[in-house]
Image (cartoon, rainbow, N blue to C red; front, side, top):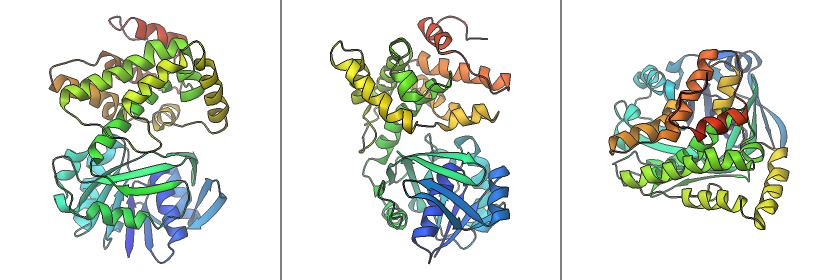
Length: 354
């Protein structure tokens, strides 16, 4: 059976590499790009870091999207802003395949135009994987990957089939499952990413320097979480959670507990000890650092557009988009000071930082 990964960056390379390592009978092909792809193609292998140490996995790769031809499963893991272009290039060659999106954001409409509903699976992963260097990816945080039908469609069995294929990965910290409310799970993760992307504005460690910092937490973190919940409620989105990803209400309670007089310091101390060792790395941070376009329009920007569509506003998420755009315009890999970000969020009606 042939399995292709379209857009093999951190997530796609890790999943494709582990599949090839743990299920060597599968014909796995990574559709790659950039320096990461060049190193994989020249070496003929991929380096995977995790609790297992470092593995070098021989694997096929190609820069040509037509290499998905003959696949029974095509996993799409490109950045959200590249979804339409990558899917259009590969679509003429994936006839009959089950197409599985494992991406940030909600990209159902972009893919539904190119894939029959019964063959389209939409998913999200609660794991954290980082591109350490070209040709090498690291599993920073394990967790579940959830799959389900696209928005507005009934389950067809495709999600269960995709979960079974990914379930051949034997890493103990990774789980793969079909979920009856995958859309609600994806929106729950969207809110977590919206919060995490705000921490990237100042290149802050999400847990130890952002959430654990009271001024940031109260001026930036809580407003974003509350805003996401309000917008999703207004839109009638029924959120769902999975182990490893807090629900939006639980996330808000956690942030409030961190400010509590007695338990707050203990929670903060524990979080700092745990996440100083293995920080959560958001793709937005790496994209800004490497002077590449970001996914902010598909995370915080999505919340803002959804708010407009249901007759409300999302100023905190709009501000995240504006500040990321300013960093992109700089193009020098620099970030704001955390205190600057806190001040800006304290005055949401003022002009963005310059």
